[in-house]
Length: 434
Image (cartoon, rainbow, N blue to C red; front, side, top):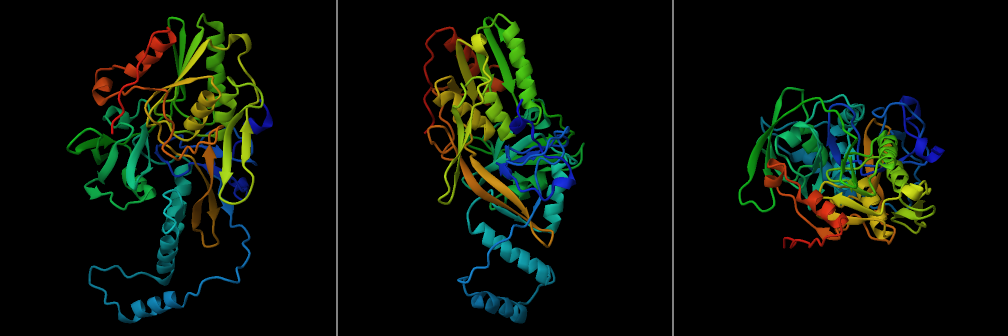
C-alpha cells in the first residue's frame, strides 16, 4: 500500500494542517466511530485510530484585503436603528454584540444557498469538534439536505434507526414535534443526538405515502460495520457499509477470500453506504481498474485545472470477476457514488438498484480567530466522463426498487435481480416514479 493511501489524520498536533473534506456536512448520527462522508487530503498524517481527527481543524488562511469591498453603511444604519428603537418583550432574548455579529455572519453564509457551507459560532464549533471524536449518543443514520428538506441518506446496518424502520430517502418533517422547515442539517443533527437510552421522536414523510408517520427511535452506542461477505452459487457478494479508515484493508481481506473461493462473479453492495475516505474509494477502485484509469475528477469553482485521481492498478489479475454488479440506492452517497460511477463508466460494472443520493461536493473547515469555524464548499466531484455527482446522483443501468414491505418481509428484489443478471437471465427495469 503506497503512502497516498496510508495517510490519515491524528491528534491535535495536526490542527494547523490544511485539508479538504468530501461531503463533511452529511451529518452522521453515531455514538462511537464517527466519520463523515469522504475525506480528501493531500497532507494526511498516518494514524492508528479510525475515530481520531477525521476532520482537520486548521487555522484561518491569509486573505488579501480587498480594496473594492462593498459599502457597509446600510448595515451599520440598521444596527444603530435596532439598538435605538427595538422594544424587547419579556419573552425576547437580549443578544450581545458578539451574538449579533455571529448572526450577521450566518446570514452572509446562508446567502450562498449551499446547505454544506455553514458558519459555526464558538459553542457549535466546540460541539462539532467533540462530535468528531465520537463521544456522543445517536441513532445510527446519516442525514443530508435534498431540495431544502432534511433527508435520511442512510440508516446504518444493525442500528436503532434501521431497527425502527427508518429508510433511505425518508424526509424528516418534525423532530420531537418541532418542524424542520428551514432547519439546517447541523440543527437537525443536534436535536436528534442525545444520551444513550433516551428516545427521539421523528415524523417522516415517505415517497408513495399520503400521510406522514411518527417513528420513535431509542438512542444507543453505535458500532460502525464495514464489510460483510457471502457466497451464493458462483457469486461472491461483498457488502461495504462505509469507507472508514479500515475499509480498504477489509476489502482486501474480502477479495483474498474471493480469490480462494470457487466464485467467478462479484456483487459489490454499496446500498446505504454514505461514504467516507476518498483514498479508500480510489484504492478499492484500483482492485478492478487497470493502472491510470481516472476514478474521479475534482473540479474547482475557478479557472484552476481539474485534479484527477487515477487507479493504481492493483487488480485481481487472473481472478478478475467474469461479471461485476454494483448495487446502489438512495443511501449510496459521495465516496460510494465515486466508486460506483468509476466502475460503471469504464465498463467494468453494471449498476442495479435506484438513483443514488447525489452528494458530490468538497468542503474545507477553517478555524477562525475567535474560536468559530467555517465549513465552505471549495470543489465538486465529477465522474470519469465528467458527470456531476451532485446533479441528481447516478442512474442505475437496471432500475429495481426495494420497498419498506420488502424489508419487513426480508425480501431483496435488488439482490435477486443482480443474481439473475449474473446468471445470464434477462432482467427488465421497473418503471421509475414520476
